[in-house]
Length: 251
Image (cartoon, rainbow, N blue to C red; front, side, top):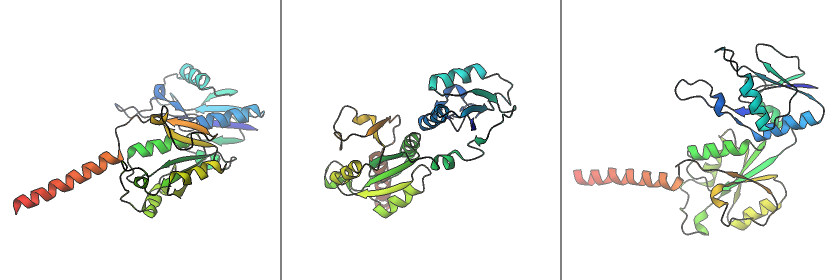
């Protein structure tokens, strides 16, 4: 079977440049799960064609860079075609044609799990879920009902579990939400064998974490941002306090 894969947005994430909002091909990063699936099809004997529209509008020849990126990312393919030269294929997989997420759902499940209280959703969480989903085709969030029960340093959630679940399921990268009250409850999920991969922040690399002795693949997600639920709650508290103090002064 001949498979034709679009490149940007399907096999790799290509951000827009801030200065002109045009694709930043130099900063493109691969989606590991998609690379894995393309290579699997290649190894099974299917023909793999990579199609790209790079340079279609500008006239710039991006062939050398694109070939170098595909080799560096370890993508196996037979042909690299510009989009204005439409190749012959049995199936086209494109983020703007056949939705790549729909296609991934037809594949054997590769289920990932990530745990936390996720009380106040901020952009840092959105990025984390996006990064996690790049490694699997089904992402489950294990929602800690109240971390403060076992750890005094943690804040009690302000949203109910139902509210947090509704918010999380509204995010495109989250497929399922399950609950646990204490750390042993989360251990039961990890031991169930239902999940193929677990996601943890790099801040746990040198420390202890629940389920460290359980055999499960781990992907470490970097936290390269300054967002924090505690920080947001503090900002909200200070804002409300400032308003109340002003009202008292006026009185």
